[in-house]
Image (cartoon, rainbow, N blue to C red; front, top):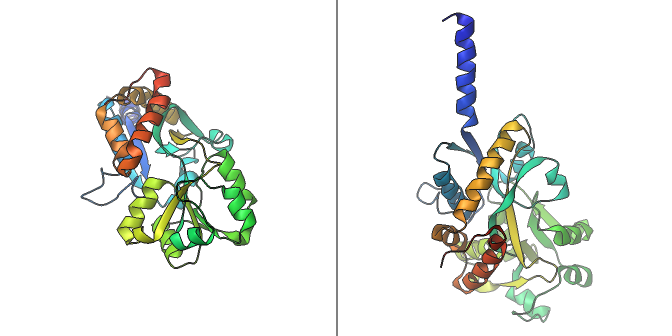
Length: 288
């Protein structure tokens, strides 16, 4: 074989191997990603990725751990080939990434965490939803949230309208850990997030007895995440394969088990109803 033909052959072999590889971005964001040797597959999103891998035996999956603050920047670079399991779809992001048509994760809606002493001062009833817009406009409270994160169209608009001195954004590793510690030390009043992550960290940090979680009037009834891949030809091909794999995992008992693993038991029945409502659109039925 001539040297020229040899290099052409090597190029196509390399391309073929590359085309069968999906490189996932993982971030330090418990309980979605728990990046320790003994629990790395126990995180919710990491568990869903494992189920997808089982449906795509011809593909190799690799993992690149990045700070959450770098996620969108790296995913938006068309020179890279990355996928991320669960993102909100927004008009801005639809221009930057290839998104799956089918949802990858279904979970409870965003919630507000605050100290019980704050809830008592505001005379809030624990089982009643609260309005983030009213809280921010009627009380001099400081809201904390992780940066580069969408909470849905309505909540994103409310957060944007809150004066800069009444909100704190954090990025980097262990961002939720840092924000919850700020709540514990009374440096912020409200923490925006999701109940599974909030309860997981509150229990881990030993703050569970001093906090209360409230549903939000302006939030959707549940949250839906989609796979996002780099905006290039390989990202488009990967999304097509992953979309088909998603349809195959909806009815697996393991899919519901992964999504509910870190939720308190009182939320499990709500999750199953929401999950069936969402995946039922695609002819799937949640396993009992």
